[in-house]
Image (cartoon, rainbow, N blue to C red; front, side, top):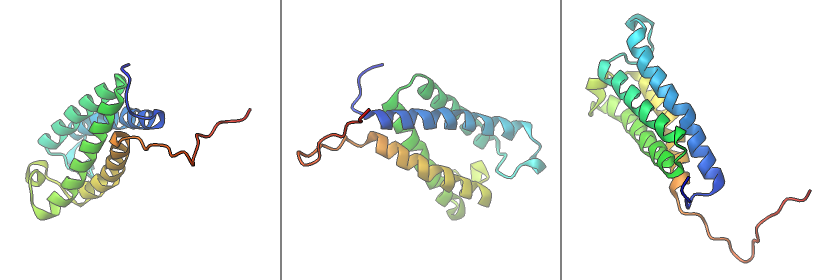
Length: 141
């Protein structure tokens, strides 16, 4: 793994979150094709399912390769897009019609998008400089 300017906790959080979210998106897209429409709470539109499968595969690949900056960038971008979709649906903006977004989709987009965007943003922000007044803490055995 290449050296990174990310701190170790940010590295772990973004890669770990993406190890969970990537396969979850893949599963959501696959279930959209496999389950009958009447059994689904969320949209079953083909473009929506394909989007989830592609995004999930890309996210999972980034997580498996343990690329912390890439995982953080994916989390931020996907989280922001989820938040956009939550507003795009009620406002009738792209991709609401193509994805056939409904009220349940908007709730999921906010519930998933906000934490993803925050985790990604925290992983990409530059590390804070330590001041002389606050020396690093050490553990005592």
